[in-house]
Image (cartoon, rainbow, N blue to C red):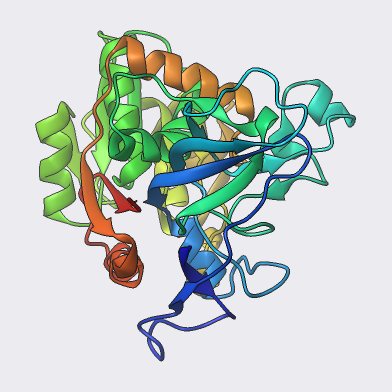
Length: 342
């Protein structure tokens, strides 16, 4: 099978093609596993973190990719509920222990033993991959492969972030950063909370214009103050400055939800600007998001089919995964980036 393989930590500055195209043996599903012929795989900032060493895989080589949509072509033993030819998706959680407090509560994303797709095990930048059947998700027929791929991470984590934000209809929501996840959140809010208003903070005018096109009532740069205080803000950036600015814009009792797996060291000094009366007083809250659990993906897929939600997608062939990642790193984003595998 054809695959794009990461063989070690690399810098895009020194190596603009960190993934190598290789021909590998087709994997064989074990007990409880299914084999998927991958049709599409979303491109995520997490892959950049793996490649550049901020969240490195535990071992190399590894095939990245955790927003996978494909067709079941083989079944291991004890994979009840699925049949050959079923179309399924795979997200970040590849496996969890099922026995710890977090797993029993339905929060496998907090399991200390969980394994991540495309980091701890091979992922979807390939023609085939295996996954435990319990961690595969049926894909609604309403969506194409390319449309469904970003749902497995960007959409589901946007849904988890929105749920944790505690937004109520009629309230004001802020979105800091406007990439794959945020543009889906805006569409969800317009459907689920028709009287809510969405305010978008983005670094360039292209992203701000895209947000207005999708229904944002106001857009501005990170440091700009919106015309109204916000009841909740979802931050999807890797920087600290937007966190400090967001806290300033929250209404009393408001909540900031940080949807990011890391924050950059280079602007950590921004935290020195925190002023208790301005940024934290009046019962403001900060909540982080740690990826997604299976229920997030399944709830989101139901909501997406109900709307129906249509993501904005840029498609690339598998062999151009390095170009897609480089453009993501450079901020050349309009919606979600997806690799076409077949």
